[in-house]
Image: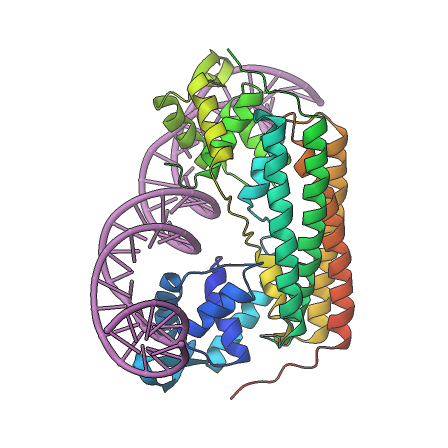
Length: 179
Length: 179
DNA sequence: TGACGCATGTAATCCGTTACATGATTAT
DNA sequence: ATAATCATGTAACGGATTACATGCGTCA
């Protein structure tokens, strides 16, 4: 029964493309997968051990500094595929930065505007980062798809932030103090 | 010290605009806030009780069926503002549906395409839903900002899904079976 | 009178984050 | 030498989901 466990299937999916160590996987998550999912090393290691115990992955090689290179097993591959085919995915994206914008009317207009300009700058920088990744080697044969989205998303979001910043400066009055 | 607790501040922020019951707040989350954050009733009720004990909100009114209408206190208002001003927000958005696209090469091209067409349809329907909300009463004076984003985001995402579906049908070959 | 929507909660579990803890190898 | 990077983990906690549990009010 597939619950959620996107980390589990993400790791398995990455290993389906190429054997890697836990540390490698963490870098992949941090660099290329951050737009869609993020993961800490401290979450990755225990999960890899669980996958190992369950027979979804195996140790392909051991190297310096006690490193272990994992590879996916046929069973593990079946599991990722089952996950990919398992009905409706969760589409909801939690985003604290955007949640804050719902309540920006509680700040001074200048503050609200500054917040949104900051967000615009962040996403513009992000767009460039993703463009570089898109130009490089994809981490899986289909990884360019979400990366293309990431570029588009970041650019659009930056544009929207600037638009919202303009609105914030104009529309939002000084917040009323209830009571 | 503000940790994360976006639910807490989200509830507080909503109450800053208008008194509401837990049930009302859940509906607001479900209808208008779902793009940026989602919350279950079972999470909302305990949180409201914690806010009440801490003096961030108070019971303004009690009604039929044991309903309690909460309103924000001056202290609670200070707390939302402090949250809004508290440094860098978390921008990472976890999205299982997009995560899956990284691994779509593991499916048959036709399956991958079908998945992406389904996502396109979902987001197109969502865009329309958000347009309706945008045309109606905003739940806070700045709630139209993220709603405008939601419309834009959903449309863009739907377009990207169709683009990706075209690519999936063309580019992705039959997946190799490792081992 | 029965279905639906309003209304509130608890318990168990799962998933993810933060802090802690350790040590080897490589580049400067 | 020493800093950065590679490399692996554990423990405690916090936040979110799912399942469970209950009951009133209103409308057809």
